[in-house]
Length: 467
Image (cartoon, rainbow, N blue to C red; front, top):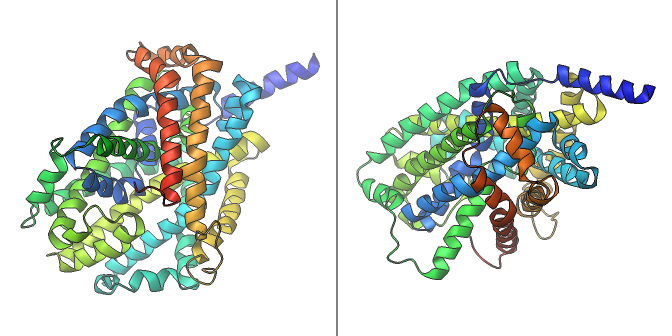
């Protein structure tokens, strides 16, 4: 009896001490910052160009307000209902499903180190453009020489990781929220500015029209299926789902803040930045490197093709500087959310304070990031499943663990605690207008979508299919 009373008061004390966002704006901007990352900028335009431009865009938007909406509401609802990070959230609601919490906790721990390595690459390129090295960065061998060296990638990785840790150290309100309130508006402003500039490049309007105009005339059944699967996968990864982030951020959300309207606003931010990224990149590539339109994504597009395009573009040095500043902000807002999630897990699980948790996470991430940072240089001959370290961690976390974690989350919400548990949580702040859609999506449609994402991601990573 005494032990139960002690545990009861211990839980109350923990809940009182738990950090929170100051309100809806802080929550939405922080969650949107998490969703807006490198995938919006270096993968969305590639997929849009490859799969019919406006057709892909239309399908993506439809999936965002149905499939993406249901998954995000479920995760935020779980976090706010339990006031805990992923491990604690699942344990509190059903101990038999605590493994889902551990799986969701593992994912950001795997992603943060290699994501910060890429963030270091972005920081290096911004420094190159700011210091007048944009012409050198346009050389075809610049990126390869950089990542194959030993010291430089480690240095920039440490700088990016350190900046992320400092922000997270300041806490939810003074760190994560304050930075998001500055970075997100600036990121949007820069995106609009570059998009407008790019659209007015002579000859760019053809690429713009291809991007925004749906065309189903040449769409075969097979291509339509591939387009839907590609849009589904991009949306799933883009919205920071199945990484424990939205559960953690939901746990910081005040009860009076509307989950439903917040998710709609996050979707607008995420889709809007992805759309603007397409306007920034597709018209420019269609003018200066049309042969690479819809054929290149990821680091190749970001660090090789675009610097070369900036070199040929009028005012390219300035545009390139602004662009890499924008990309740095997008990378930072995502890395902050990843680290905040891991720190929150350490705090909840080990009852450590924020300083100790941040230090522990920083050390672990530096150690785990070393193979990814050195994997294209001194350790290039060492491969896992035939992949470089960074590619392997990306494959395991994004292509395998994330869809599995999301699938189990759908099963948990749909059939174990039932959708009503989340609906009741959402309705604490008002009527849940789309609760019927949420129920159908989380129980029946989303699980099927996630199985398709898992299958297509694994097959694509193994080179069996191309998406």
